[in-house]
Each structure stands twice: as structure tokens, then as C-alpha cells.
Length: 474
Image (cartoon, rainbow, N blue to C red):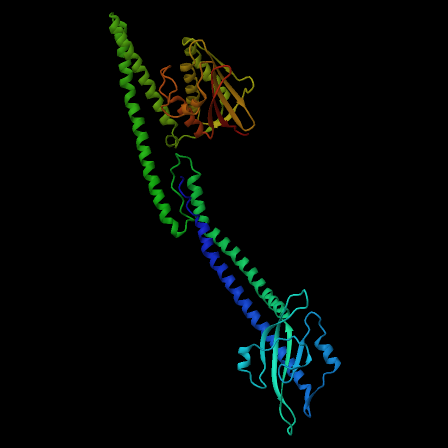
């Protein structure tokens, strides 16, 4: 089971900043809805109360009865809007229908307990629907009055005026939309500002991450602190201290290897010379065999010391004072191949150069290091190709790079060894007497020149090692 991924700091900041905004927006929308509903209810109630009082003024006592002076024009006004018409009922005594709509609901029981003459009541009710239709929600205003002539008995009358609740809900929704829509736009703008602010605030962290992760493994330079915020300076300083300590350790190890190699060169040369003299004078076969092994060991040790010195020269730290210059890689290949031809003939190999396609190959580099790289490629091929094999040095100029390759027709290597042999002290075979540093030195020199090394098989058999370097323009 893989460990859980750590949460993103940017995501956490956005969550903690935007979530409260969302909660506040929801609370604000709910509050706005309640406020809009209250204002719409108050507006509807005010119109109903006004209509109720106006209607009650049109009813006058006459003898033992009531005269209702409600002109046709007034009824047309009340019922003008078919979608939101006013419904009314006049009953006297309350509950005994006289005029209007018979189906208007009576005031609820809890409201009638505290009902006072001359004081209007406003309540919600339902108008029963016609056959096949749902009941209609209403907002009803009720006014109970006592009317009658002074000399006659008083009469109690109830006037009710109602309006559909759909109008109130529509008004509430309009108020809600008119209020919440600008609030939503404002929230979106604030969210974008918060997002941009978080990105801008975390930009130094991203720059610090890129400055570290984009480096080569051997790049131990200190991190620049010029633009680092206060909160990151302590972290960057700690990283710089660690990088400095690692750099001092690595440099100490490299100096030790170079110094030890220098100190070993002379004793090994003396040992080899003395062993060769002793081998020439020895008569006993057993003694000659032992001396021959001493000579082989001294030769191999001397080769290892030479390779270690080459590797030390190829390290970036060793090239601080070395400057690159324009040179012709094809010319360098011709010169060095000619120098190695006698050794190849002595080893029973056919060494040749193919530069017919690219007589001139301009690059910028250090002549000594590039010469060392090509020498290691040829030496590696001569060591492992075997007697009777062919070794070909080839220079090819492409659009943006120059390819220097050494191809042999020896036994080659399995594909899974092609990348491994570029590492230090890695040998795919014990034949040839190498020390596992030749191709590692080539890789180090190529990377110092901004290039790369590739190892591949050669058909029908053999191996090809290619060094690709940037082409010098102009």
C-alpha cells in the first residue's frame, strides 16, 4: 500500500480562504431570502389591509340591514389581473355570506381568540381548487367591524380580502435575485483575487523548488537568496550549508584520489620496470610465471592510476581555469587514430577512420579532454573487441550536433549492459584487463561539454559507442 500523498500547500490555503467565503455566501443568501420574504409579505399585507378598509367603507347600515355600494367599476379593478386578482368576501354576522367569494378561508382559531373589533388580521390560507385542480395558497386580510344606526341594534360584519401567494413568492424571488446575483459576482471576483494572491505568495517556493530540482547531481552551488521571502530564508540558508558541507566532502575525496594516484605513479613504474628486468633474467619456469603475473598486475595498476588521473582532470571542479576553444573534431580524430594504429596492429586489430561524410566537424571544447575521451574510446575497443576484429572511428555532422563514434566488430554486450558500462568501476566482462573507468571518463567529459554518450549494439555483431556534442555555429 503506497503512502498517502501530502496535501498541496496551495490547495490548503485556497480551501481555508474560499470555504469561509462559500459559507458566508450561503448564509448571506439565506438571510437575504428571509429579508426579501419579509419585505414582500409586508408589501402584500399593506395592500390587502388598504383594500379591506376601502371595501368596508363601501358598506353602510340601513335600517336592520346593510347597503353595499360597490360599483361595477370597483369590481373590475379588483378582478383586473386574472393571474393575481383580489378576492373578497363580506359576511354578517361573521361567517354568514353576503357578497363575494364563498370559499375564502375563515381566520384560524388561534387568531380569532385575540380578534378585536376594528383591528385587522392577516393570515395564510388556501382556496379549494376546482375539480381536477390543486388548492391555491392565499394571503388573507380580515377586518371585523360593528356597524348599525344609533337607534338600532349593532351589527357585526367581517370583510375579507385575499390575494394569491404566488405574487408574494415572485416578488421574493425577484428581490433575492437582485440581491444575490451581485453578491455572487462579487464572491467570484474575490475568489479570483484570493487565487491570484495565493499563487503570487507561493511563487518564491516554486522558484526555490525549480532551482533545486533542475540542477545536475554534481551542481552544489549555493541557492540565491536575493528574492527569497523572510519565511524561506532560513530554509534556503540551511540547504546552502548542507550543499557547502557536501561540496567540501566531495572535493576532499576527489583531491585524495588525485593525490594518491599521483603518488602511486612512480612506485608502480619502478615496480613494473624491476619486475620486467627480473623476468628477463629468470630461468626457472615457475619463477618466470610468477614474475609475469607481477608485471601484469603492475601494468594493470598503472593503467588504473592513469585512468583515475584522467577522471580527476575530467571532473568539473578540476576545470575551473580551463577554457573551451573552437576546434575541429574531425581533425582531432584523424590525428589520434593515426597515433593508435601501431598499437592496434600489435594487438592484431584493424583500426581505421571514416570521415568521408564530414571532413570538418567544428565544436567548442577543451582539446586535452576531448583527446582523452577519444583515446579512451579507442583503448576500450582495442581491449575488448578481440584479435582479428575491426575498429572504425567515425565523425558525422548533423543539423545541431557532431557525433563521434567508435564501432568494433567484437563480441559486443547484452542490451541490459549498455547503460551500466557508463558507470564507474562497472565491467561487463573480466576479459581485456580494463578497470571499468574508460567509458565513465568519456561520459564525464561529454557532459562537461554539454553532450551525451550512448552505447548500442552493432549488426551483425559488435558494439558502437557514440559521443554527441553541440555543433559550433559560425
